[in-house]
Image 1 (cartoon, protein in one colour):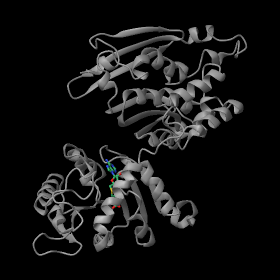
Image 2 (spheres, rainbow, N blue to C red; image 1 turned 45 degrees about the horizontal axis):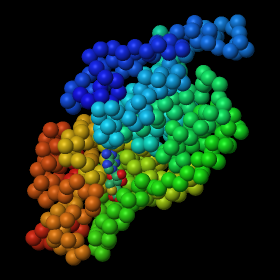
Image 3 (tube, rainbow, N blue to C red; image 1 turned 60 degrees about the vertical axis):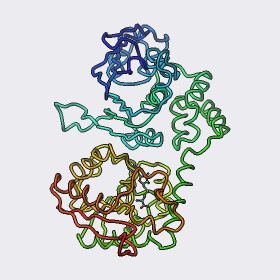
Image 4 (spheres, rainbow, N blue to C red; image 1 turned 30 degrees about the vertical axis):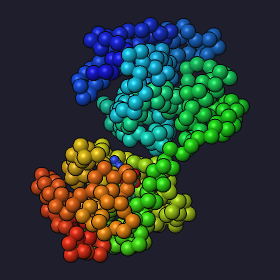
Length: 453
Ligand code: SAH
């Protein structure tokens, strides 16, 4: 409902703007307390485009009239975003400043974006910024399927962001995807790139490609921009998370619970005769390593929402130096258990090791559907702490969970009630196994559910 305050007032009507190359319209297809949508429609006037051009640019040729520009999201859309949503992109809101400063859940859909670098490049640009990316490639011409696919994509970006950051990322990265800019690039473009890239570009793994493409491959400008980006000293936002992870390890380390867990999961995978395995929330790849060492697992995929963890997994597995035969068996993908994703489908088994307790309870329902309805592996193996056991950890203060980021820790009864409900709803059978040294009163430190269908 507050979207109108964040973007443009009065969601009840259509707002139209004149731009040098056409018109922009903003309207609100959906408004409710839980979800709202705003659309920006850009109507490019190809004749106006030609009129606005400098004399030398392709004078007299047909392609200045016949090209894809009016139909795609390109640097024209970036200009429209800055004109129409300028206040929001600057992080300001007259009446809802607190909301403008808040990280909210957004989904942005870019209807048709040209990208010759393909889906890999789209992911490489947006995933490090914390988006879950879905890119749908379109055929060149629907009436002639034999022509194959074109290089146009519908891109969906989902993630937790401030609106200001969402708009800025799209503003900068649209022309980068496209690598074709409609205006001349000069020194002031370096300034603009650095200003808009503040806080995220300096640490972006693709910063060189972004700068080069944004500046239209002008070598001098790109060098200048990169040199100045290198001076920016960014604190690592995920360092905090790392400190917390080691805390959990200290509590559980003395009993080598971690090894018990891996052992139990591997036996469960062998028991269901899994050849292809996806490890959801793979973190730094603790389970991926032993999976890879056993050739009975023909295909191993690790998925996590944390870009940083995936980077560590890649290094720990020495993926860049792996022999080809081994390299062909493993893949790391960035994604979230909150969103349905085709890449998660078709596996014999999925493992979800010490992950569910990191999910907000109201979002468990989304996770259940993603795993059991969409990914729908033949077997799913889920482990989670048994909270009853916490009293046996000498170093853990009473009533405290094992990890600061745990949203909950379940008793054996709570876990089995949840698991049985899920199994029934999605047509699976489930059995429960303890992991680690079992205590006669409080049970084992970790609990595991093995779901099969
Ligand atoms: N399975 C690993 C890591 C457990 S820590 C192991 O046993 O060592 C929990 C992991 O879940 C973290 O790496 C975190 O980034 C990941 N995670 C949390 N929420 C997630 C989500 N919505 N989608 C995918 N991964 C998620």
